[in-house]
Length: 60
Image (cartoon, rainbow, N blue to C red; front, side, top):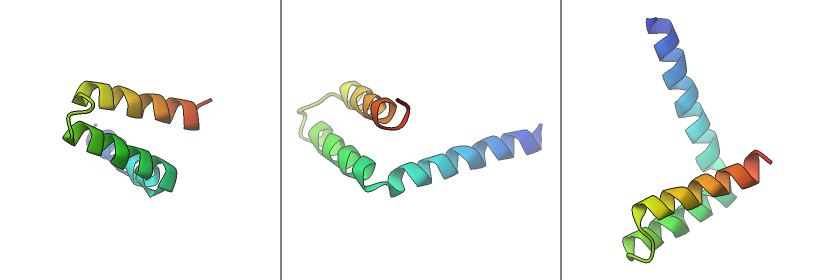
């Protein structure tokens, strides 16, 4: 089980690394983060926007 947990954690970290290495995603994430900081978006709405961005740009 320990090996499976380790593999799962490493896969998640690698996926995040690859995602943030993409300039289009990083730019969108930073814009969304700034909107949340400025109270233009709630954190929940920001997360929904980021999730939709990922779904529409990478899984369709």
